[in-house]
Length: 576
Image (cartoon, rainbow, N blue to C red):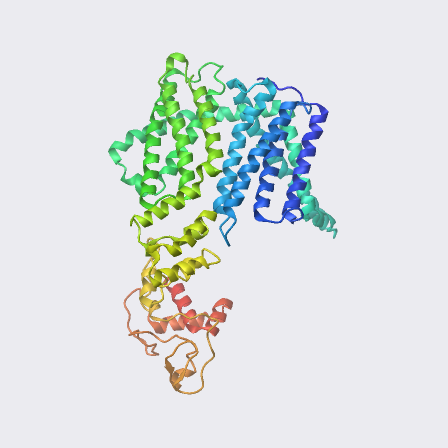
């Protein structure tokens, strides 16, 4: 497909009108004028963001029946998926919606981008079996059109911001108030998106020039990336895998290299109709890199499998496995294409791309429905680990069920009330405490026996930074107190201070206002100078430094409320 047919004037107006309507519908959802309920809002956002976007990218003729059929079918599919996501994220108080909605939004957006070339080819050729060159053309055209639209919207808002600032210089705030109004912002952004899409779809020659420049960059970098991939695999027998596992992100790094290599190879191969690029010796380097991709896939899957076997399934690990499986399919498919040179250089690559794209669409639909619900699988696996004694009840992550697993996790948490694993009084109390939590941050903060509440426990949690000196030994000897609970000096002898229960003597009542007395055997502050080791400071010297710096605003305010805090701050400055 070298050139696409010109868009009629009615189609151009339709694109801008649909984009404007999309902005209006998003504003209505944001303002709460049309929806009441979290589940309904999720369905609304999913439909408003997906269906109009697909329509303005794929429309050719308004009288085309296939275009309207596809739009209605897409709306039905996304309504079902959004309803399931809305069901999963509701039904329990204070569930972390992002744990469900972020994977849902990302996966359905990627699925829409993959499905669009097939929908566009069906409109153009009136059949589903589309030629690969057209799929390639539509895919890259859509990607560059979306990038161009984002740039156009950003520049447009930059011009409007300059207008508002310019008129504000002479005392006119009308434009600033207008542009910051949500109603104007949503509608204006809708018009900008429509115009950006229209520019990308009608001005194809500049878009193609930009694509050729991008492909030239990829073509120049592919041999370098291939050489890096080969050298890494060759180095593994000499370095071993221990260093790789210590990174704790081996799967992410390895899969990123597979994704980059797949992207670069597709940009160089393009639609497969031209002559093979590069000299023969450079093509051998690229082929060697493709043959090494199964090694990356195997190592990444093995690392992820170890993580799952050690800690069990979660929603994040499920999506990581889905992405890793798809990239591994590309890895093995591209290696297979490199082993069949008789059909032409990487000729089987086209079939691999089509098959993996269809598999990705199937995964996106199944994982966002009841067919392959990741939260159902993760909750079931975590409960199985509990019942198989692979994890003790006191170490079981109740917070994950309470906040990170959607409705299914909360229902499973309630069911644990009747579970024999939570039969003791302490375990039941902990379970009820987690059920009543409002935020996940309260889980560890208020967990009995888990938070450091003694001086020794606090010392264990203090770790010096790399290549930094250890804290001053006198610092942990002072009790810390909050500035809110510090009281003023007491007037009489042996009167307990408001911050600590130790009585203060008459001599120290005028100077001691908080728990600044040393604990255990910490030396008292003396006015007589004492000899110290080189590089150390005495408590008297620290106190003198604190008094010299008491004129600073923050130090003065803190020292006035709590001298212990001021002493700690001062000693930290001296150590620095």
